Length: 48
Image (tube, rainbow, N blue to C red; front, side, top):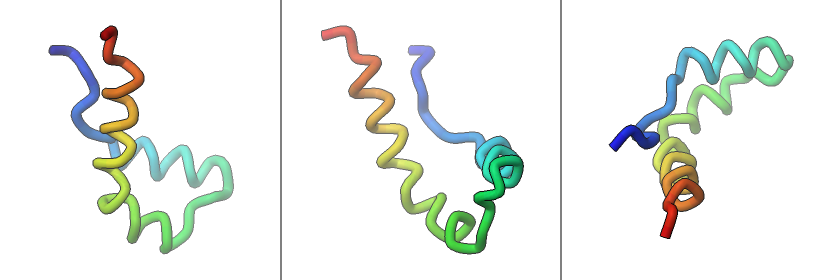
């Protein structure tokens, strides 16, 4: 409850643009890598 369950794609793309890292590859792979990132956050947030 209250954990990470998705990424805000808009925020990710705005941040990438601000860092000069926005490119078509990021836009294409972001939906594919979202579950990997979310699962990593869940593992790191797990108190057990």
